Image 1 (cartoon, rainbow, N blue to C red):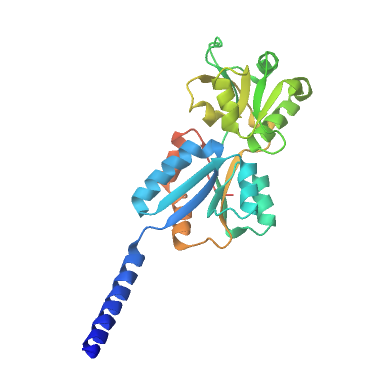
Image 2 (cartoon, helix red, strand yellow; image 1 turned 120 degrees about the horizontal axis):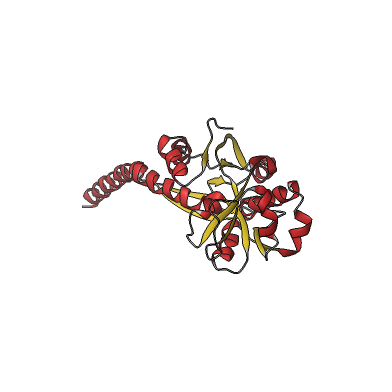
Length: 262
């Protein structure tokens, strides 16, 4: 009887081991992505398509690039980071927190001045020369001008135009670009400086004018794998980011699709 029981349990353990291997080889894997707030809709679109195609599951956290970079530096469990400028990615890279062979830039954006739709619209978007009067009409919402990329780009643009010192007392700083957008949408401020793509996600605002690219640093979104997280499913996602489907998702949300990775 004892011999029979031992044989039974041996077969049971063997079967469990076999089936355990079979299940683990096909199960969906979890991927964690930290992405700049302005990427919320585009990245969500990509995630939806990738999950359907791959069977993997992705958890995405959206916030200001400065916040995300610091969280990763403090050890937050991220597999992939997608930030809104090169400086914060360099900050992480210099700390040895990124897999250098998996850093690239595929998408860009434009900077825009938005106002509540309740403000009478002109027949067309304004030009740079018209910004001064709009900006001096009341408070202006911007993401943190010393830390968050959208705020940094906005400050650079205003400095290039010679408007920064005059407008600075009226600037209301927010933790991220979407918070600045929300203040404009709620009518809490007269205007806001955000990405052009942000203006497309809230019908309570409209673009009053666009800043030309020569007024500020180039707006790009570098993407990287965190050191030690280059698992097969994570690399599969990075490969998917190079696909036509991913480029289409970003283009449909108004992002600039770069011809070559940088």
